[in-house]
Length: 144
Picture 1 (cartoon, helix red, strand yellow):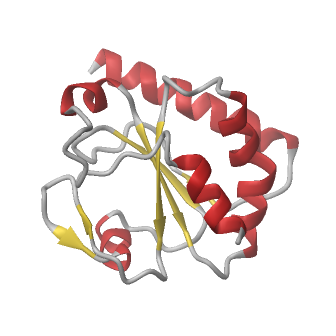
Picture 2 (cartoon, one colour):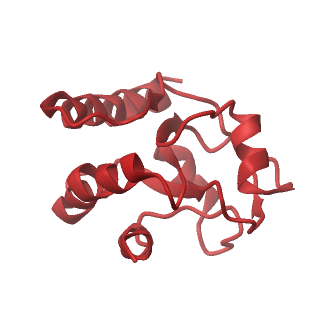
């Protein structure tokens, strides 16, 4: 249920390569955070409840990051940055994601902009680290 709530909250920030209404020019100017999770991952649920949901509700990063959740135990194929269909597991292999949660910060071609964040520990530093990564990804995108 909580995953569905997060999914609903992410929809306004969600980027989908399948969505023809989302102009590629807009996506080219905003970094994309790929959030790799699993439905049975309690670290993922904690991250969503303690960090991601408050971040989304605050609206602070609404124009600074696009969030796309990749649920690894889903079988729903998705279109990749190369317009190919892949399952979430295949996408995880493409990005060498081995642990959930993992946050990747990429451009609209799937190129990583800053160091990924792997795992989640309840520390006050995690929020700061996430905010720093979002800001650095935006800078990297603008300067590249």
